[in-house]
Length: 115
Image (tube, rainbow, N blue to C red; front, side, top):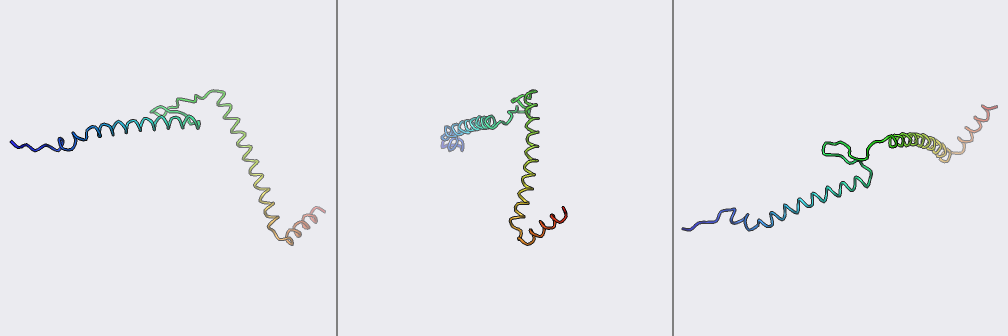
């Protein structure tokens, strides 16, 4: 009896080591990517989370909350200072780029309004 080998015997069985090896390699790459991603999150200060999205670390303590409050206040102060510097820079740019006749006229009008 002349029996022809099935598709599984012709293709799958000879390549079974490559299929299993590829699956294992893919799993290893996924695990390494997860470890690398966790390392990046820790390095850059992102909070770690469980699979449900609940933060693991860093835990919010009173010290951390106070620190965040101080940093927020400092951030607001620096933003206000930056706004003032931008206004001053805009005035300096206007003075530098303005023609001298108009600038002289404005200065004289300010002197006249003071007297």
